[in-house]
Image (cartoon, rainbow, N blue to C red):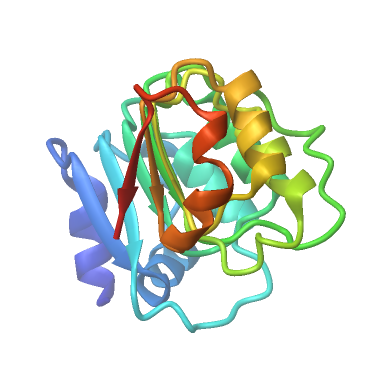
Length: 195
């Protein structure tokens, strides 16, 4: 992204939707002070390619998010750390959150608040299956979720969801064969969707 494009982006007043690959996001966050950014996004998404490495974008991305009060939908392909996730879970208008990655080990979730506005939650993590506690700690932050997408489900996760996600309407599974072990746990009005 050219510097002139970054300046133009900053000065937009009616921008509601922004999709960036990580490389472009790095360019913007490295080159701009967002304290006086004018636009208020309703949707933000990260898109491929996202194989660009940088040690930490947390503080810069958090500073950017703090300028946005209207965010309703967010898709992240990178893990930004607990401070960023905690802020995301405090965004009062956010109702649709897609996460690709969470920490693989050792997360107790104590730094992350609860968000009762999120009704659609899509979890695409590759490493989530063996770490049930990570899933449960994450799901406990979205008690009012209605629609959820998981890579995989087992009886432990299903039992937790039934007890804690009392408004659940649809469960979408990537590994659809895992439904067989949990279908009996959920009432008939909970719909399983396969992709």
